[in-house]
Image 1 (cartoon, helix red, strand yellow):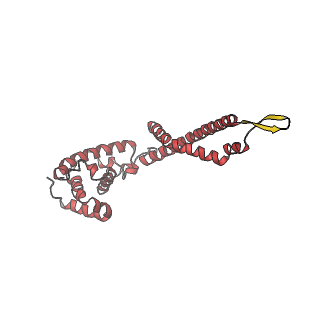
Image 2 (image 1 turned 45 degrees about the vertical axis):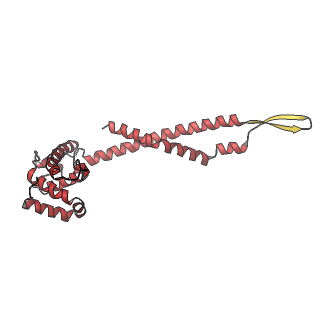
Image 3 (image 1 turned 180 degrees about the horizontal axis):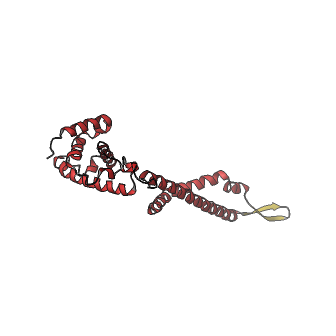
Length: 229
């Protein structure tokens, strides 16, 4: 059974409500227990200066550290909170609130503590999470452009080859009557050739082909990009 929050926790709840009105209104019942537990009962287990001032400034090692702390925090809190939870549809914290919001609350709590965030004293060449995301996005875009260029060229060659085959296949021998008899000549249909080689028709067919394949290529590209990190 959860205990009543202490004065410091009540003050913190009021400050959080003033700063994040919409979020507090949405998760009032949850936050009224989560914030007091975080402040009064949970032992972070590491120096507070081991973490930066916000999630976006985390290095890869700090991200792993924060994740391990959050995992332990949520497990310990859920053991208590679930005892008072009467909704049968709620089985985990994920059924109540997004993980990203909990990280936001966690760093809000750290800002209330006297400490020197790690990002203020780390080496400049340490890559932070935001830079890593930007680098991966740039790599993804480069790979996507390259892949689409290869795909477009392959599609262009395939359509040209099919058009050439159709022209040869659909060439007809037309019988032209004359006084001397029948004269056989080979004559292609100009209208059919114009339709096959019309740039607008080609562009529509090519774009339709690219659209149908785009989702598969994006999934493949995302997987290949992720494996590089």
